[in-house]
Image (cartoon, rainbow, N blue to C red; front, side, top):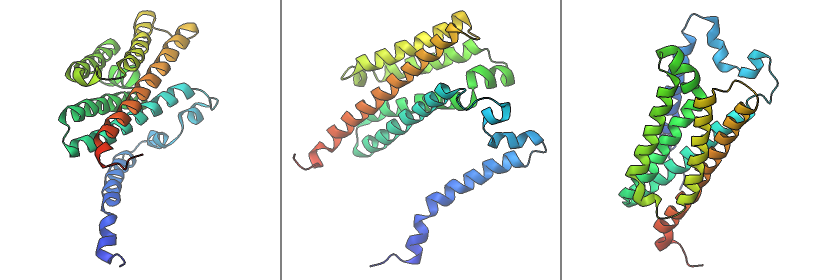
Length: 214
């Protein structure tokens, strides 16, 4: 049978809810009486007159955080539904960490927003990120040591190296900037790879009883 009008309308409710939130966010921006509000919709390189490739690695790193967030969040939803609280806590924490760093990449939290707007020192923000990561590692240690912890360790070591270069050398150009951003990019790749493979393994262990034999 076909879907009734009521059923078809019900399928649009998630979209309508998302659009309501989107319109509210747009209204907050557009109601401001400032010409700068339109710059929020423009590409930063276009506004500054920079070549298209400027910041490409930074944008790619932000996209990788988004991938890690999506993978972990989807895994969290599944294992939470089937009743795997330890795995849910592990993946939920990983999703929260990924969201934090994704927002940092989009909003420049530790480099611009928090230091300039709220006068929170950059090192204090980085220390907060480190504390969040350590909290997740401690709370999820039993899940972490079961598999692929070497991949996670490699990713975190390179991310930590990026933070050390940033804090110790305060790079503004040249080899120091290259070292910081290269380490960060490799670290995010390691983190995302770890979450993708680990989430796959967890979901396979959950779904194996209902999957057809090969």
